[in-house]
Image 1 (cartoon, one colour):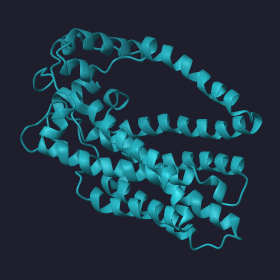
Image 2 (cartoon, rainbow, N blue to C red; image 1 turned 90 degrees about the vertical axis):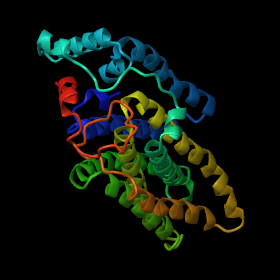
Image 3 (cartoon, one colour; image 1 turned 90 degrees about the horizontal axis):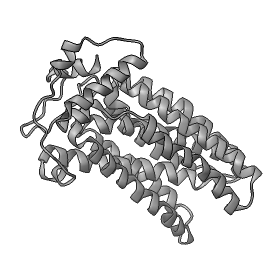
Length: 322
């Protein structure tokens, strides 16, 4: 939703600022867990903020005008744009809103269209593996904090802190070098960090934790890039379906990570080897994806080969952004 409200040049920054709040929550978690040892009470405390979120989502979050236009709900889209202009202290010429049109029609689409259309299907398989690898790297390190030799609360707090520079650093890099190469490199270096952890003796917990923190840095950067990159790969009419489908791949990895840890009964290196190899392999898949840096968001499905450049129908997107 944030990306659909934001100009392409600022969409990555908008996403990063939102994800930084996630890092703040991780740091708060370490302090709350340190103070509350009863896990039932801890769960209740951690759940309580979600009650506020449920109410705020419906009453305060505006609907995406891009999505409304793809559904043929032009008047509602105009109201949301008027509201945005009022909040930002700006005015929008009424004749400009009257001319507002989106490409294509308000044809209804569903999740199956992602698999029916070749270029969307290809992007989903490739990006789905990237989400899977990012999640395996991220949670493989996060759920393994007790094995690095330092206090688990301190390690969790450090993991939370490192995500802030990871988010900001990844934003600067993807804006300069592009989404595709950065996504692949983040996963490669994160996987390499997991393999290097195995090369450090266990009697050097500070060095082990440092390598793990570097891996967590890369994992966070890869996740951040995925949240920016994935919405840009799908048209508005299927964007939420595409992001949700890719996110599901990440949840599958999150389910498997604790099970992979059980393999250490055969050899202690097996889990970390898997956490390292899977992300490294993702580098090759990233190179098969199109670059989306400064490319206007696609609104309708293009049955022909999509144009991966900023020259595609700028006028309607410019009206929306303004």
